[in-house]
Amino acid sequence: MFTYSLCMIVKNEERILARCLDSFAPLFDEIVVVDTGSNDRTKEIAATYTDRVFDFAWVDDFSAARNFAFSKCTGDYIYSCDADEVLDEVNRERFSQLMQAMLPEIEIVQMKYVDPRSTVLNTREEWRAKLFKRLRSFRWEDPVHETVRTEPVVFDSDVEILHEPEGEAHDKRDFSIFQKAYQNGTPFSKKLYAMYATELFKCGEPADFESAIPVFEARLAMEGLEVDAILVALGVLARGYRLTHDTTSFLKVTLRGFSGGFLGSSELCCELGQYFLEAGDIGEAARWFERALRETEPVSDARSGGDLAFLGLASCEEARGHEAEAKEYRKRAAEWHKNVFDPYA
Image (cartoon, rainbow, N blue to C red; front, side, top):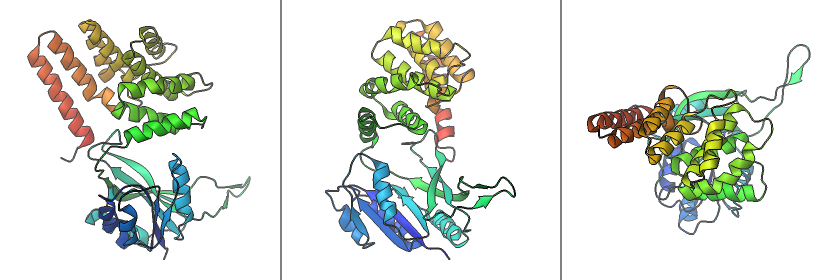
């Protein structure tokens, strides 16, 4: 039988920490809580569940904090938990069964991360790696031309983790970390660029897009980018240039997305639709919103290929004085949003 550590990094979570730990704690042999600078009762609450509460000076680096937290764990497997996560009874039982049936070769367990309000996801749910084997054993494989297996053994479980945030959203904090890391010359992975773009489209304000312009201009200038990475950068820049009224740059990046073999993206189509809508060219605007729905796919923001395009078409019909048609498009936008973000309602 394996042992299991619950591992958390926290800051000012007094409102929700007990809810989380009441949900998860009964499953675990050890609870490790690392506080990154709370000035509320977070540490006091954590101490009622565990004596393994540690301080870590926040350095605008979640990886550094999580690495420190993992270093304090002693279990065979570590569950990386956030304070706004909750397990219901059904999934607590699934988690318990998983623990009892764990096979030693499994190194990472993925779980469904369910976000009904879509505060951090492009859909209602997605797979996330949540449970990790603390110590990894390297093994040779293949009977000839043998090699050490470097890919981890990943298991997709049936456990669903409910994300239930309260209080202030973290988007402003994340944007500031992105900016500070970029200004310090910290290399971004492809995944981090993609996450930055997604968070911008989900909750970014005009000033956030303006701040992101130099980041994604530099990204676009990199050699050897894959098509999807280029389209991600073009989408952010298109929104940023449109919001800052840099029409020349806006047209350059949107045209690039549809030339040289590129098929564009729903984000670029919506940006062009909004540009022509604001310019009063309703027919051209409608054609681009239609292309967002019918001819392209989203790369950063799922809504650009769904309800945002329908809402754009509704605005076009309203500008034409067609209230019935506009109402129908708004209905379709609401249906799309419900089907994608809350299909079980």
